[in-house]
Amino acid sequence: MGGVENDEPASKRLKLVSGRSTGLSNGSSLTEPLVGSSRDLMARPLQYEGDKEVLGSKGVIKRVEFVRIIGKALQSLGYKKSCAYLEEESGIPLHSSAVDLFMKQILNGNWDESVITLHNLGLKDENIVKSASFLLLEQKFFELLHGDKIMDALKTIKTEIAPLCINNGRLLELSSCIVAATHCDSVGSSNQDNGRIKPRSKLLEELQKVLPPAVIMPENRLEHLVEQALTLQQDACIFHNSLDKEMSLYSDHKCGRDQIPSRILQILEAHSDEVWFLQFSHNGKYLASSSNDRSAIIWEIDENGGVSLKHRLSGHQKPVSSVSWSPNDHQLLTCGDGGDGKWIFSGINDKSISMWELDGKEIECWKGKKTLKISDLEITSDGKQIISMCRESAILLLDREAKVERVIEENQTITSFSLSRDNRFLLVNLLNQEIHLWSIDGNFRLVAKYNGHKRSRFVIRSCFGGLEQAFIASGSEDSQVYIWHRGTGDLVEALPGHSGAVNCVSWNPANPYMLASASDDRTIRIWGLNALHVKPKSAHSNGIHYCNGGT
Image 1 (cartoon, rainbow, N blue to C red):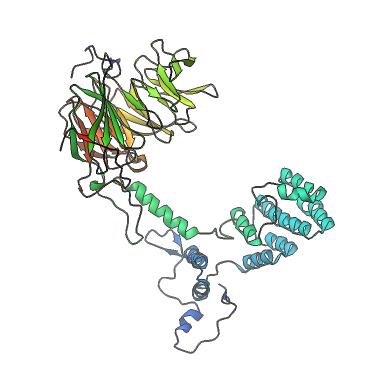
Image 2 (spheres, rainbow, N blue to C red):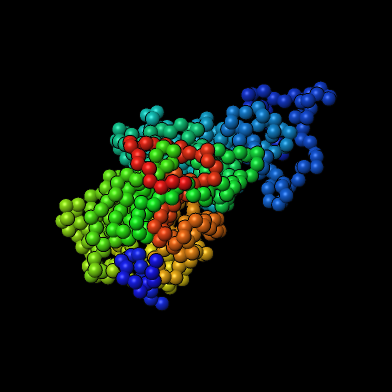
């Protein structure tokens, strides 16, 4: 393991440059109960210590809203009697009497009355009133047209819909239905199903999206709040890496360190010199590695997570600095990067980028300072964007189709970078021993920084990994593997085991419990969970295995 002054391939050795009552929903009503009966508790609001304006230890939950949301959930679950009892006992109606009337008028098709009631709901935003009125009158128009009341439908457009002075494009489409009623079925709209009359219940759902939630509560609001709380708990859990998606409402979510691969399961020793690069295949069934020994090796992962040598690729006259799988995992490219499996992209010594067919024919070349002689190269999964280092402290994103170039500027020399699986984030390793996470979806934005690993002389590579790529892993010159939580930036693990600099890490995309690391100690280490009984859910086998390395 020499310094940067050694005569090593460029990509491995980087030369450093410094209240109302309601009847029951089934039509019956609550009558005066016998004294002392259980229904006496349901017949009138009870005052007790819990009847406060706000609930909860933080004092941020409004009691009225809380009760209404519970009532809405009961109603959505089909417990209509329970919802009616809750309204009666709490004295808190699910909706105001005006809203109840409004909804009843819509379901009964009383369109003129519903428009009047809408204006009496006390809505302050005139645009909301107009948008809701448009939906009501549009439904009225289609029902008149469906009933062959052409003149009444025309009158509705002229005297009621047009004066609203909104959605003129849709108004023209409605007018065309008067001219040719058969065209009506082909009119498309986000507010209706292919121009046909929508069920009135569907109209109510659309009005819920327009009207303020305090007027008509959105559907499934309680479910949304609970799901949001569970998701936030999961995102805040720095050890969450479980394939088991079940979460209980009875207790707060919390995972332990045992979800993180931190135990050496295998040591692979088939390379005879420093191992510089490794990468799992997209399907997680294979691992490819490259070395200073001028070879690349394809390893196979069996159904129990064991790794064995599948093929040794010899023939290079110089050390193999990197490998890359084709998107379908059918080909492996050494010393380069692949696009969509039909082309090969490469950086050239004159700092241009070329695209080649697999038979060696050059298709296109982007001249100029598009890349450095020492540079990583990434292609988005759709093949539209090429990502490369255009200067020592800048990364170029080149849109092949739009011919647009965008640049990420760093204030330190960039040593390597990695693209996330969803093409939305870029992980950038810097000379100053920092790793930066950039959002490249839309405007560039620096999302997070990760510190702790050691890098002074060599190119050290990092990667995304774990369940939904929730973690960042990196090699380090202190012979350890570092793992951070991607969202919080907290250092989760620093894993000892290697006896030389760890040059590269790769997390199995199909198994969040499997991590591989390549080192100057000439070994590859396979990391897994401490719990021996855990197996990947999608087990597989690919034929005969020849074991190399052991625990």
